[in-house]
Amino acid sequence: MMEGNEMTKVIVAGYNGKMGQKAVKMVQQHDGFDLVAVYGIEEETSIELDSSTKIFRKLDDIDVDADVWIDFTVPSAVFENAKFAINHGYSPVIGTTGLTDDQVAELKQLSADKKLGGLIAPNFGISAVLLMQFAQQAAKYMPDVEIIEMHHDQKVDAPSGTALSTAKLISEVRPSHEQGNPAEKETLANVRGGDYDGIRIHAVRLPGLIAHEQVMFGSLGEGLTIRQDTFDRQSFMSGVAVAVEKITDYHELLVGLENLL
Ligand SMILES: NC(=O)C1=CN([C@@H]2O[C@H](COP(=O)(O)OP(=O)(O)OC[C@H]3O[C@@H](n4cnc5c(N)ncnc54)[C@H](OP(=O)(O)O)[C@@H]3O)[C@@H](O)[C@H]2O)C=CC1
Ligand SMILES: O=C(O)C1=N[C@H](C(=O)O)C[C@H](O)C1
Image (cartoon, rainbow, N blue to C red):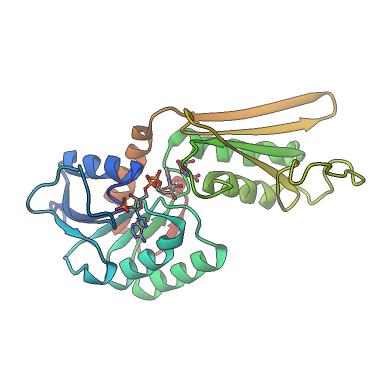
């Protein structure tokens, strides 16, 4: 745990990316944070960094004294990054999607062994956190549900981490049952979307979008649609800041921003 007035020393992994750039600015502008290092692969960068911020291009070269590791990289890198962070005593604040359930379980165990706080948040936006909670509540009473997630066309993973988390939360509470017509046949491959425990997930990718999710419930004679829209990536940064402020007070790896709100 950190002492009262100390600055929180932060590393941003994926600092050149769309989210990484926002995270760098947020850390630089926050009175209580000190950006001690950034990590990214690309040599070319237009990001303005103080001379005191070290730049790393290889994971194993990172050797700075830091408290928190913010990760907005890629699904293929995040597991190794998270293990590296925990093994070096950096509390991970992970926004990168794509960790499997097994990987999350391994990271939880590692954090518990090291008694180190950390957070994996599929979405740092309050509208998405609320959407997931409302959707879980609604599914108790309206168990027939489909999820449509819509993102910018540069996104590498589908479904989105938020959509997958929404489906997991819903499947925790809804009575297990067949949804739709058991005799249904797809005449165009995958047209009914992905299937998570009977919940269909549809992923839309289009230029102009940022991040949006719609959860549609249907029952006899009525329907309910819950929707959230991310119009600006800046909206994720208050959640990231709260996580960086609070996570060093914890001694385990948490999943979901709601645990810190
Ligand atoms: N939890 C949340 O609230 C949110 C989560 N996300 C998630 O965050 C992640 C990043 O999204 P976004 O910023 O849009 O993606 P970008 O593609 O814009 O950025 C990803 C960055 O990752 C870096 N990178 C690539 N490979 C590696 C590696 N092996 N090690 C370290 N860094 C690497 C790249 O660095 P370089 O340019 O130097 O090669 C790139 O700048 C995604 O998984 C996305 O789903 C996004 C928004 C919100
Ligand atoms: O890639 C993105 O942009 C986003 N990724 C996260 C996800 O996969 O859920 C969070 C948000 O949807 C934006």
